[in-house]
Each structure stands twice: as structure tokens, then as C-alpha cells.
Length: 423
Image (cartoon, rainbow, N blue to C red; front, side):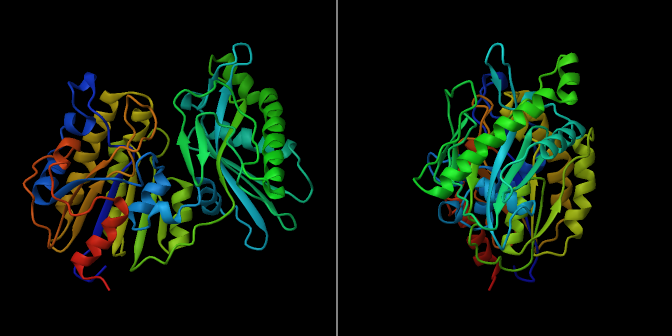
């Protein structure tokens, strides 16, 4: 960006929603007290953005890619490669393939599958489970394995080889998502059991990776079933994390042009770290400490954002997403209210007249759906050269009345750069 000021781009993870009966026919954005976001909307321009395309629900990484000006329909090669690259699981001198995984719980008596292990795995439990798997599971001697867990039920699995090609063109074992090209698309009425990976193309590298995935899932399940961690969980009435669900594999990194100017990214998703590395942005892990209330986290994050010397400061704020996944509209409304009071308000008050503030979402997670959807997301932007459009509140219906001259998320950064005179 130019020396005229800084651009702050705040992406509220999964914030966009649909009208909820529990909220009197309003969305969480519309039901929450948001005087500061409403003021931003009043001072600037508003609109609804398509993040990727109709029928393609974004993930946080593809949403961030779009908001930073890279069209995922053009550049995206899958969640797995960005996750693996972000965790430095990519071998630049050999062949690599990486996947996103869930630590799931399969009830072997009923056959019922909890895809997210009830979201209550602690960091300590996950570290112990990962260590046990890596210690006990062995594949072919020329296949390197990397595995990690993060965020209560999520993780990354990566294979590498110096002498055998590997392909991510394999199907998911996670029944909740189907692989369509580079994207993982949610399945509404999915089977209630893990699936076997299969090659999606008739290629030796894809057949090899399908065999590796199935062998690793089967062997790791034996380790997980015998783990003391899961015995303790079962004794306490908690679901055991006894199976890994694998999805969104890929073997190619996206070929992205370098970012223009200095960009800093704040987030907690390894794939965002991978995206930052690829475009030449600085990445800072920013997430609440275990048990830390979100208002306290925002109070600690704010001075870091304001002191950052970058021209563009991008912050991925996780708060609204999980209540959307868990169909908790009241809790999602509270998360939005906390963001308004403890982050958006103080940030807006601290900005100078030459600064620009954008608040939007990386994707929608409607409570009634419980998953990411392709719904358009609201955006409000205020700063130099931006004339108010008459909208006076922040939310989906209000944003639809705005006159933002762009329709897709990947158009946002070029439009802002044109306003601010970037080279």
C-alpha cells in the first residue's frame, strides 16, 4: 500500500449466517449489539461478497487467499498442501503429499461416527496420541511420515519420498467431505462410517498414496484403541479419539505471485502460515491461551495489530465459527458482541484519518447448517476516498443494500489498492 496510511483487514471466521428462529428471524450479526461495526458501516461502503463461487464453500485458507487478492478458483491446490507447507512438512528436494485430518470417534458397537471427537481433546491428550502413533506406526522405509494435531480435533498428515512420486489425487476417508478438484465439498447425508481411500486417477502415484493412507489409518486405529489416553477418556465418559479421518489431499503448492507491499497475517490455522510463506507475508500465530476469555485475548492482540509496521494487517478472528458449527446462535451472537466491544471498537478508535478498516468474513458457517456454506458474506469498509452509501448497520441484509462496486472477495484488494494509489 502507499504511505498514505495502513489497511486493516479483519476476517471474522464463519461469521456470516442466516436468519434464525431462535434470534427472532435475525442473524447473529443482526441480533448482537454492534455499535462500533454499525458505525463502520455508516461511515463507509457495504456489500455482500461471493468468496469463491456458487456451490464451493470456502475454508479459512481459501477465504484468506481470496480476501488477499488471489482467486482460489485459479490458484488453490487444496487445504492439505497449505497445511503441510505451513508446518514445514514439504520436502523441496523430493515428493510430498499432505492432508487435513480429524481425530474422530467411532463407536464400534453402534457403528456411529463422531467426526470431531466432540471437540474436547486437550492439547496434552493430542500430543500424547500423536507421539504414540509416530512411535508405533511404520510404513515403507522410503516413505517419510509427519503427523500433528491442533485445535481440539484437527491435524495434518503428510508423506514424503525422495524416489517415488506421490499424488494427492485420492478420495477422502472422511465421509463428511468429497474431494472435487482442489476443493473439499461437504456431504449433507453422508455415511456414518469412515471410508477407504481410493485413487481418483489411474496413476501409480495416486494408487500408492491411497494404499499409504489406508495402511496408516488402519495401523493408527490400532494404536489409538490401545492408548491409555483413550482408556482414561472412556472411563470419564468422554468419547475416545480412536480413528483418523483424512481429507483434502494435495501434492502441489499453489503458484502465487508475491504480495505487493508489506503484509502481516495474524491467525491460528497452519494453512494460513503456509499461505503467508508463499506470498512473502509475515505470519504471527494469534489465538487465545487455554481457558483465556476472548475479551482478554482481543485486549492483548490489539496493541500488536496497531504496532505492526506492515502496510496491510490481516487478522483472522476465530470466535464466531465454532458456535456456528455447533448450532448455537445465542453463543455466536455473544461472540460477535465481544468482537465489537473489545476489538472492532478499540481498533477503529485508534486509527488515523489516513487508515482504512475492512471488516468481513472468510466464509459463512450458518448455525442451521453446522458447516461452511457458499453463502455470501457481508463487508463494511471505511477510509480515505470511500464515500458512505447510506447503510447504517452491519449485517447480511444491510450489506445487501450497499453499493460496494465489487462482487467477489478476490476483487477486494485490487479495488482497495486502486483507491489508495498503490503501484
